Image 1 (tube, rainbow, N blue to C red):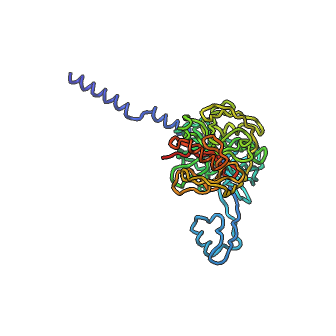
Image 2 (image 1 turned 45 degrees about the vertical axis):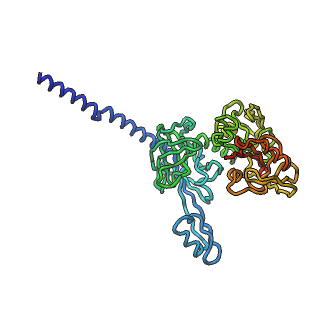
Image 3 (image 1 turned 60 degrees about the vertical axis):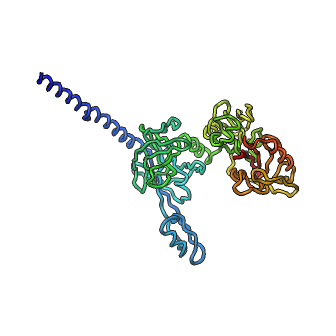
Length: 453
């Protein structure tokens, strides 16, 4: 019996040892993961380039004791020296390094706009050591994307993934030239993904413009926007955002964007409007820009857009993606919720302009209304609303951002042409529920919800 017990104990101990001691199977898993990383380094690095830009520092200006700080010395220990003593009349050239990926095998390189901004000379070095002079094809400041070109053929183009399929928690691998360390390889995870990909993979100066890859070596993003060195937070432009920009830069030298001309925000950020509309999801029209397709349509501030041509949109990003996918001059149908009613608003897209000119509107002293919510108004000179003359500090109106010079045109969807209309509309409104106020700021239209606390 004793020998049987001993035999059982030995057998049990052997089984437990097998379960707790790493065996070949565990090592095989580790080796396979290791091999996957090695393969990514070998495969993806062949399409990564090191970009060196030469910039000329500006000359100092001003009298003794003051002058402009040359570009590149701001925020460094030399900034004080140059401010106090002035910079030499002729400053030397300075080189800065960044990264990029081979976008097309015929020499087109994708990188960040800020990597090549202001460069007088650009040099590109490939993984095999070859060097080429490069020229800028086009840049886009809105997305921080740039395309440069080298005279070379049959380059190893990067494999691009579908960044819309990214999952939080998946592997993220950054490759680039941080601190002049060529082809540095760092591993982390996708920490979050909204407009940009957030990762804890180490991204430092020099990584900008380089790829963020998945475990298969495909590019999911272009590294950019470092949020504080050594803080473990980096960002990358999703490749699905960068790709159409890059294509347009190659084809046209610039990005031609369709737009509607509205400032938008998620409904979830406006709790008061949520309560008024009893809706949970949607995209709120915050402001309508003058001279835009939206201004020529029936769209109004505080409208809640729910679909674009039948495609549901729950966030500003989804709405922007749908509009950017349209052609210039194409008519789109927006499903809109207004005052609890579903309506359809057709809007014809136009080309987005680089600048929007905003005019101002001055108040006149024809008449005034009693203060309400901490604001005082007076008649507009054209009889089309009331102009905010004064906003009390710390008032509800001040908290909502109302400013002197704003022109109120509607209260709870009722037109306001003068101070008497405004006073009468407020008298009918339910201040505890919230009052929807349309206004014009300069030439733009927007809204606020004023609600008593």
